[in-house]
Image (cartoon, rainbow, N blue to C red):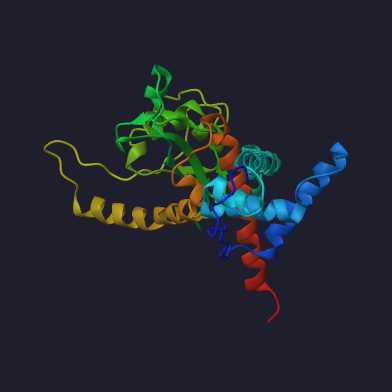
Length: 296
């Protein structure tokens, strides 16, 4: 450390628990080891396992980098460099949307749950940051769309968009409906996607249907002025909400990584970070599923 503590006030250290599997630690360490071998790196401050442990601790608990680095006698900039290196390696392993949808169809999937979430960021000065202010959440952030299956398992997450972007606008800009339709999958969205089904009506010449588009877009019924919901519509909305609540479990698994509580990294690293956390979340879920289905 650059500053020596006063006499009688030496630094104290303590231990914390990292609620992750050993397989995840080994997977990240192997990625680091492979990269060092490719770069022919002869010396580092920490071995691959130690670096993987530090990076996972940063992603899971979001401590101050100076505090975490001080316990290892490294600077905060070194820890930040480790984090950026590892999230780039993990993000490269994230599957593209086309491959994800093909796998889902092969498993017999028919419906994909679509939802958006706001990743809080620090408020920055400048006119360019105004687009990141979300009027819905009354705070600055970045919007990301995620796709989950009917069980709430995260399948794919989009690149980040400015926080003021509406969910349905982001879905249209990313052409989510068209890409799902190409694999004969139906999207299901919440009330933020009201009006998305009207895009199907105006699609009179569909390349997939070879004529008038027959895709089904699932959204809840919405009451209008002087036209309240009927009892049947309310029951349909209740059943629809019961199906869509699984997507909240997917976001809960993603936001268990506390670094997303309020992003302090530069916004240009947000997409890489989200895709890296997606890979880690999917790996943890696969490990747990293997434990559940394994021999007793």
